[in-house]
Length: 420
Image: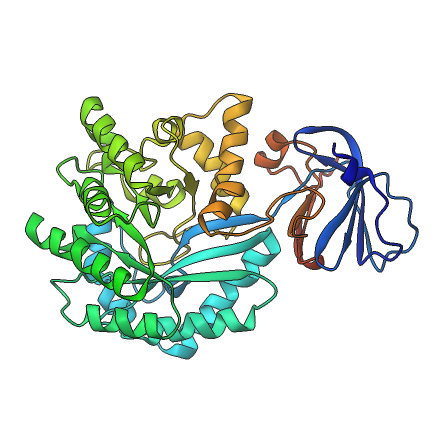
């Protein structure tokens, strides 16, 4: 522990968390918070705090970050559901035809209520911008984002789900979204009819990103079919244009079914391009996996190989009760837990890595500064009843409190009972 963390803090604290455990440190600590920042960690002597939380020996961690979600579609399954991803794409237009700005706003607010309660401090949302929804979904999400200012940070990706070649209206709609202040442009090249159209899709997205000095966050190798090579396509074009470090690839499921030597070649290109990768194990576990009775290729890419190569790999939840996925409750602990299971992470270090894939790694991806539990860091924290990561992943009954900017903004509590 640094000398700074032991120094005495201000006499007046906004919040004092007592008797907490921290990752990577032995013992129990008090955490003093003032002005939205952590100002003291140790045995805090001040008796003057506007609010106190007794952690009772539970962990205090950084808040969670979900780097890939489709907020505009949450809670829309009642419009139309689907059993396979191909069916979902075919029926998506039917669902979006029912969307209104008010409807999107209301559904997103319900989702963000859950997210804040569960400890999500930031979320990056893909939002459809295409001929079927126009800018309706985008406007609804932006209204909800404004309503939750100070509770959760919402970053938006303008996402042309209906393609670029197949949807000639998409490029102008994307440009309009970027003029509205959106700083990320997405893509889904696999939606196109052939390889040449996929290349046109990626090329157009990179053109628009360069035109507006935006970053790229693209669905790549979305399916578990090995003949798709859109991740490699993105990496090649990023390198050719000198856009290293400005692109993120989502899903990357097909990478898992490439022959090993081919996968190694593509991963090397991903490293050269400085591409970050987001896996989506919760939704992909159900949606992908072949057409037979026995599921295979569960949609977690080659997470451990990517991590070993030095790629920043994060994990997101993707969907909640919508066209693609019928479950989910906006709980990032579920995402971390399912990341462990789907990627075969077994050791203590790997359990920690799965946690980092839902906290520090996506925070780095989103450019969130001061994300940690140390003096000077932003007071964006979660207080858990669980005393360690294993108990957290087990979701043992108890309390979880979410602190954003030094203010208690939400929480959940579970309990058990028997007739014994």
